[in-house]
Image 1 (spheres, rainbow, N blue to C red):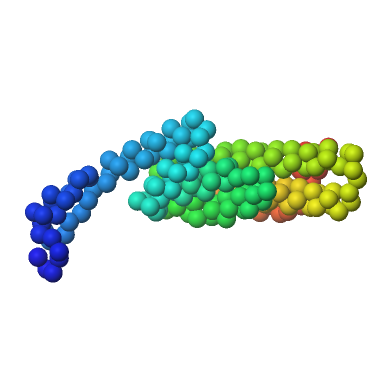
Image 2: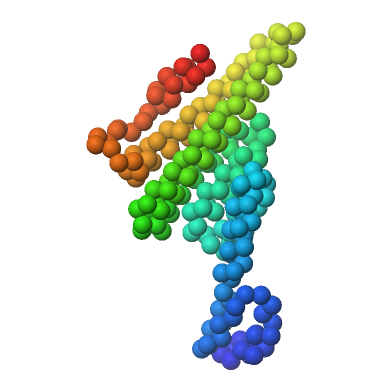
Length: 212
């Protein structure tokens, strides 16, 4: 018994889910089926664009499998997509801050180059899509502020609205810069000449063209 509260047989009776390995002195619960079900639920929520459920199920997966690159990325990703306008900047920054560890997990866990590249590209496509969503939200909020100012010119209010818009779009720019630099660092794309790391002025020039 080794000082444990329950015997092997008593412990077996108490287990109500999972497969129990009682060989030897250690009891292990195999939660493979439960984890597989959670992945199915999370991926279904993704296909249905249900950010709230996707975030919930990926959170549950992380508890059981903390090194999952998929759960590590999409948990942060879908929590961010569920944000309110006022939370855009912090939500974008959360995704930005998660990318380094997510790409490292992919590189460590996936030995097959094709699967690894596929995962890299999946994350990239999701990040670019999120950046578009956040940028559109920031732009819409700024336009709403401009309409409010049409009848009542308030310099202080306009300045605050402009600063918020600038901070939110800059966060989107930093997100894309981070993604691009990680692609360079991990050599995701095979090119004859490896491009240098991107810098902030690249975003500023592209953003000016986008708003023109």
